[in-house]
Amino acid sequence: MYSIEISNLTKVYNKKKNEVRAINDLTLNISQGIIYGLLGPNGAGKTTLIKILLGIVHPTLGNAKVLGVDINDYSVRRKIGYLPENHKFPQFLTAEGVMKYFAELSGVEITNLDKEIDRLLDLVNMSKWKKTKIKKFSKGMMQRLGLAQALISNPDLIFLDEPTDGVDPIGRKEIRDLLVKLKNDGKTIFLNSHLLSEVELVSDRIAILNKGSLIKEGTVEEITASKQFYIIHLENELPNNIVQNNLKDFTIKKSDNDTNTYECHISDTVELNRLIDILRANNVVIRAVTPQKNTLEDMFISLINKSEQN
Ligand SMILES: Nc1ncnc2c1ncn2[C@@H]1O[C@H](COP(=O)(O)OP(=O)(O)O)[C@@H](O)[C@H]1O
Ligand SMILES: [Mg+2]
Image 1 (cartoon, rainbow, N blue to C red):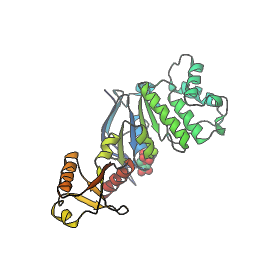
Image 2 (spheres, rainbow, N blue to C red):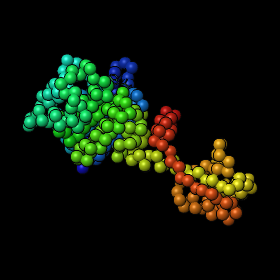
Image 3 (cartoon, rainbow, N blue to C red):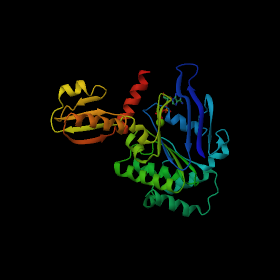
Image 4 (cartoon, rainbow, N blue to C red):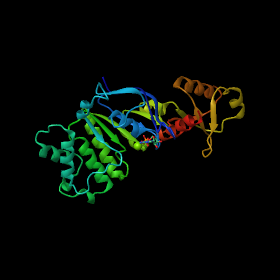
């Protein structure tokens, strides 16, 4: 069962002049009960996508369903929580006041509202600020309150647009832990971020968006595995004649800063063992073979660069 189904979605802003294609023929399905991370540089179309899924922005072409219901059906929003990017709550309200305000806006009958507000403020570690006016809050406190507000109607699906933007490292860790807790309670979380490490650490799957187009989708492992390579430490320098005669079909590069160390791009372990057999048959002494993985950041930059060239 999918929480979100997106089919051939396109959004073009300013159709008359300075046309901006914010979403470009996007098709994507997102399973229930996972943390899904949408990554992309500023202007990639992440916020536009969330706004379309929430019915705030209308798509130019294509359609989408959330929780099995067409996005044009407003009733489904009762089951959805939303933390907007750069949200602004009325400054004269207290933390508790903000929660009450959004409880009413949500249109959902909440039994024992005061208790539920206490529970949510406690969940985001904001209990002691309950009676404090929010104009005194830091960015991190505002984001935590924003998260509590997004949970007020006990939603099945939660959209978070840049939830850790402007939050310090400890606050970020707290938010990540909270997202995992919510997932363990069976909720689906759709997370937008331009911060790679944030998304990498919590998401079950990720999509990378650039200029409105989907350029990669999968688990973090799948996305980073495609460029696996090995570092091979040898006892001595690799003789040139072996490289030229026996290792022609391998891509081997001598390491710049480590003597007798080579970087080898190999697709699988069968190939790796073939390489080792050749080295051993030529009496090359191997000290160590270490698999290396590109980080999501390496992959992100190379994918964005590649899509820019097309
Ligand atoms: N209301 C709007 N009118 C015109 N252009 C917009 C509007 N909202 C966003 N855009 C443009 O659409 C593109 C995608 O923006 P956005 O969805 O905010 O990206 P992201 O959230 O990934 O930074 C950008 O080029 C942005 O300037
Ligand atoms: Mg955005």
